[in-house]
Figure 1: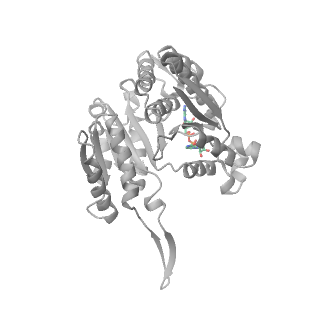
Figure 2: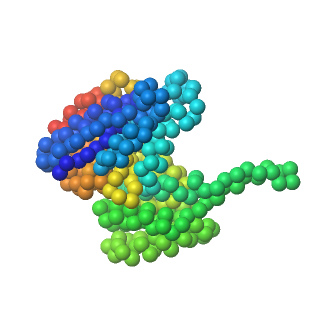
Figure 3: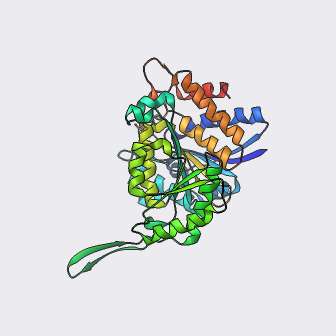
Length: 360
Ligand code: NAD
C-alpha cells in the first residue's frame, strides 16, 4: 500500500522528532511491504522565516492532497523569539488554528497510557497506579462553548459577559460515530461524559449518543457526569477505555488524563475529520529549551505515527508493531533524559529512534 503523508516538522525539536518518526515508519514499510510517500511543508516559525506567514495556502493544499498529516510541533520561546513580536494572526500558533479549520478536524483523540516501566512518574498513589491504565479521550473540537456566540455588555452599570453553548444533533452524531468506531478497535467500552442533570446541550448529547450506540451492539455504553469523571480519573483510571465528550469538558479532562501519566514526552494525539483523513502530532510543544541538542524524546511523535497507521490507513498490525517496540524499549531499560530513572540507560533522540527500529 502507498501511504501519502504530508510531514510538518515545524520548529524547535520538531525536525528532530519527525526525523525519528520517519525512520520508524520506513522500517514498518520495509517489514510489511508498504511505500511511504512523504512531502514536507513548512509551518509555524519555519514558514514565517521563509514566507512571512505561519502557513501558506499552498501548504494547506499539499496537506489536503495527502491521506494524513504528521506534525512535529510549532512555536518558539514566547518570551524571546521575534515571531512573538508579530501581530497575533501572523504568529506561529495561527498556523495551527488555520490548518485545523481548513481540514475540518472536529474529533480530537488523546490517548493516556501508563506504561508499567514509567509508573514511578505517575503522581497517583501506588495502589491506584499499580492497576495501570490505557484510555482514549475523544473530544469534540469545533463546537460548543468555545465556538458559540459571546459578548460582554453593561446592564444598569453592571458589566455582564455571555457565552453560548450550542450543539446540534449532527455535530454530536459525527463525533459519537467516531467514538464508537474507535472503541471497536479497542476494548469496546464508551463512557460518554456530560452534565445532563443541568444542561440541555448535555441532554441532547446523551440522547444522540444513545441513538448512535444502537448501531454498535458490541460496545458497552455508560454515561458519567463530568464532575464525577474528573474524580474517577484520579480514583480509578483503569475503568476507562474511550471517554467521549464535548469540547470544553474534553479540554479539561484530556489535560487531567495526560497529567496522571506523568510523562509529557510519551503523549500522542490525533485530530480527525469525517473521512479517514487525520492530523497526527505529539501533545507536547516544540520545547525550544532543548531544540537542536538531540536529547528530545521522540516517542510521542512515533506513537502519533502509530495512530496514523491505525486510524487513517487501518493498518492495525503495523501500528501494534510500533507500540510493542515502545513497550520493549522501555522494558529493556532505555530512556531519553525526560523519562530517565535510576538503573536505566540514557539515550539520545536519534538513539531512541534506532532502538525502536531494531525492535520492529
Ligand atoms: P513544551 O511542551 O514545548 O515544553 C514544556 C517542557 O517539556 C519543556 O521543559 C520541554 O523541554 C519539555 N518537553 C516537551 N516535549 C519534550 C520531549 N519530546 N522530550 C523531552 N522534553 C520535552 O511547552 P512550552 O514550553 O509551553 O511551549 C513551547 C512552544 O511550543 C511554544 O511556542 C508553544 O506555543 C508551542 N506549543 C506548540 C504546540 C503544538 O504545536 N501543537 C503545543 C503546545 C505548545
